[in-house]
Image (cartoon, rainbow, N blue to C red):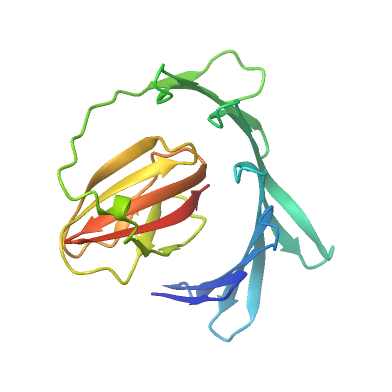
Length: 233
């Protein structure tokens, strides 16, 4: 069960997990300059005692690209945060992610290559730093023709809030009309990266195929157009 309470600079996210006698409470804090975001995750026992405290910190550049993500947990005896995972991101001049480094006990590296249309074409994954053996993933693309009213050009759009935000695998939305929907996802340069159709009662979009960054989504439902921004990490 999820319950979200929004504030101007803070999003409190309550995520209940009835699992082994505890649930998780998430609190996401946004800094005023939008350069840093914090997600505090509390593992709370059903007697309301906090068992473990985790923290995830996202760092952004001026273009709202994620440049670093750190995960840590609070050590009660040391009274300090212990970093478990650090992920750094590098971009080219077009703002496309070209390299991701993960340090979590070992060093994993992923390099991204793009075709002439700036679409992700290949991933080179190195499981260990300095290891010349690696895995390659190739991407193939198809064309999709959208048939509908381009109402977003008239300026009659309605703002849409996505949650959780930032998100890793799926984004959810509420307050839409009931009916079939069509959506498009754009990056900060205006390139359309993903589009598709949603069922009458479907209120989520799978974003697991996107690379970390900031995105803009447009959803068409009946005669109304909704739009909103979200961050993938």
